[in-house]
Image (cartoon, rainbow over all chains, first blue to last red):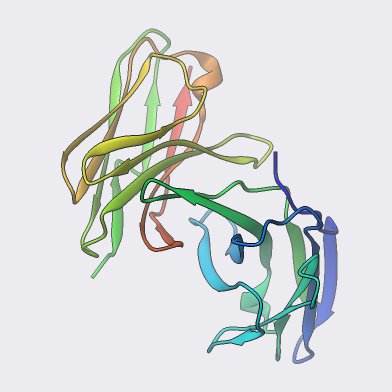
Length: 112
Length: 110
């Protein structure tokens, strides 16, 4: 079972920031938080990941609370192409393999 | 250049048949995976291979057998196909925790 809880859906106006929350209250000290998204019918796409510190890349920013029990993915200027299902995943690794357990995710709809 | 490719993209077949889906990655990754996404859109890991060695084998029927001839390839063979096998199958490869997914193979069993 997924170790994360996300709202099932969100809307965001085009050009505005999209803030997607995720709860992971049972996260272990060595587990990372990963974000992926799946645009309709395509394979999931890696967005960003973090352990403790906030992270930023060309796609998004990841804000992790100090107690690491929740995080927020921020898309600074959402476009219509950002409409997708966003998955927050707590990653467990071992033996050279990383097991991603996908939950139901948040369906983000970017509205013109 | 396509990083992770799968063939075929679509596969329609009858119950009882045996079929294979091929996956190739040109990223030089050591680890490859197979995922299944059912009609309700739940995405679930099936297998993981690291350097051609099976690492993860979730509760998948024995009819499903992955084969890794080399690090760049992980094929999925399915025997005696059933209606419930209809789904989209995604191959992925990873370096560290970042996984790169293929475009998927939509399998329809009639």
